[in-house]
Image 1: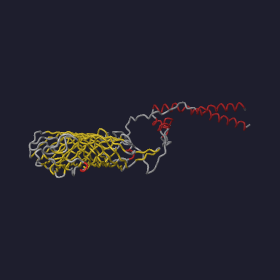
Image 2 (image 1 turned 135 degrees about the vertical axis):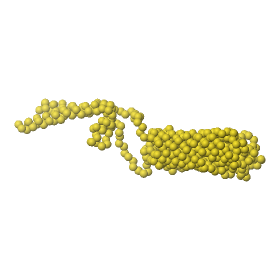
Image 3 (image 1 turned 90 degrees about the vertical axis):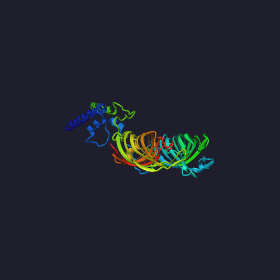
Image 4 (image 1 turned 180 degrees about the vertical axis):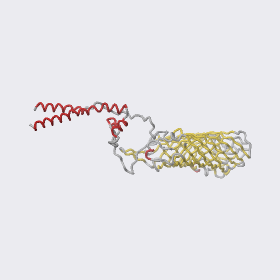
Length: 260
Length: 216
């Protein structure tokens, strides 16, 4: 008799538990509305402030937050591409690869001539860069101590890297530190051979071409060393020379490049 | 007994309701952050929109040979700059730059009050790099246009006011968010004020500058 009653009571208790279970199914609608209307963080903070330290609550939280494995290695860093760079440096003129200036029928080789360069560039893709720059050149010549020439030009170049800067293999992106490049573009500005009957006026450097290499010390900082050729279209190269024609100028320019 | 089992089974059926999810959410796009998250284009400039600074200026003036083949040797001079600027973005700022110009070419000494408006690009890393790095060195390049009110000794000039242009590059060394040392190079070119004793002299200098900036 006693056992039968116990049996019935146990069924009753079981029934009470089971009957309460569907109540769980009602949670989500109201909860979800609250998460959206009041904000997931408020609903989550209320329910979890003293309970669970970090798990994002709710269905919405499950969607928004995900835990992923963290790679902890000094060899690996997050790959973050940069959009632009600044570049500044100076160059020396190659006298043997530059046309000789003429004065009174004699030719004078460029010697001790130098250039400063300031540029602003865009990393257009992992192969291609665009750059605008200002170049200020001072030419001095052998056997002509009191005469010099000055060029101020603004230019635009398109650079092509010979190797992809960033190499993707699956999820890992490797960065190359050494990347040779070539560039092609043009410049324009003003120049003057100082002194009586010196050539001067508007000048176009077209084409302006470069061949060089870049070494990046970090993701952001590196140096460029490049040979630059310019074909100057102006009013001559020297003193008392005929206007017109083209003159060839070669420089080697070293500069710092900083990505940002 | 069978009735009891049936009742029990009926109760169990209701638990199946838990299996059905009454709604389904699918995240299609991440909502754009309405509140700046500290990694945007103005994260630094929003906090420090304005700055002032002063610089010592060492100028190497270029020599000039005029059309009569008279040689004017360029000399070196010292002067100073005062700048006040505004950051538009973290990577771009404009500044008003007062320069005391002291140009020495041959026996001519030109002193000028020169005002440049400079546009400067800072290589300040933005985007996600900020999460991983702290930047102390911020290189920059820039260009400026200006006017110079000049007085000259050793010659007469026709134009008291001459246009000037400049390009510059340098390195900002930042000590915290309020203070920075600035070391840089500037190429300055002044259009000729039309000297009476030398024709076509455009005072031109390679300038090496060092100074400090304070951010607000």
